[in-house]
Length: 322
Image (cartoon, rainbow, N blue to C red):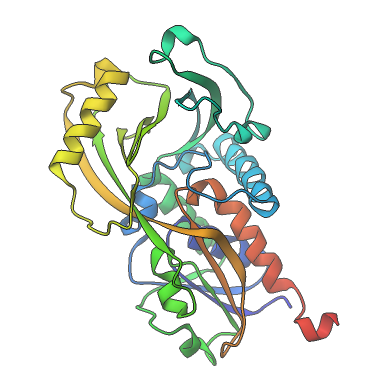
């Protein structure tokens, strides 16, 4: 079923990756979104390939592997995209840490002398995107494939029937309410502060305590310090007290960042649900595929999600398969 007119609702990393994949498959694609890509949650994301707040399943495992391969290729073939292969350390606080991610990314035991007392850790090299470069690059790649972009609020995907043959809902935390059939989506608030990079070249991630996750992510334009994991919180205003805690924790891990000039600060709402939803939505006025619920793993699952959506929309209808 090639050559369909497909609307993609949402212009974050999932929406843009999906639009790219559908256009590359020969579809006539339009991205519908209220926000510019740089105003979405994706622009706030840490944007490092690492499974975070996402389900474990065979389908998700395949998406992890695919996205790692695609991002690694982009880093090598398209330096202008803003994706770099960065080395760093994942600090582990649990007695039985989850190292399932090492099935795709090569990793070695970190030197204990470089870790906090009592912690273990793994060293690895994975893609990390400077989103101020990557999102515009991805948008431009879509446009080069013929994708159109409309700044347009969508309140009912069924209203797209007639103008489009199918639609993809990739609107992040709004997706469940937009479809009206899913109340399981929960925002996970993440706050970051961006500082001048004093020369930090390696990332550090430390999932250390409760609502806090500490990380330092060196991008081309700044050093991103984070963060938070506030389930159900919805405020998009940066909290000064939370920021102070982020700065203190990051300086404890990497002392050279203390007192560095703050460039900007931001908050994003990660779209979490018990399981990732990448599936057809039955009973609608036109074929709709849902693509949301990535938690903190939007970038990490982006290309794998896009490939899955494209496969679903290219599959014949159920009645034709029976």
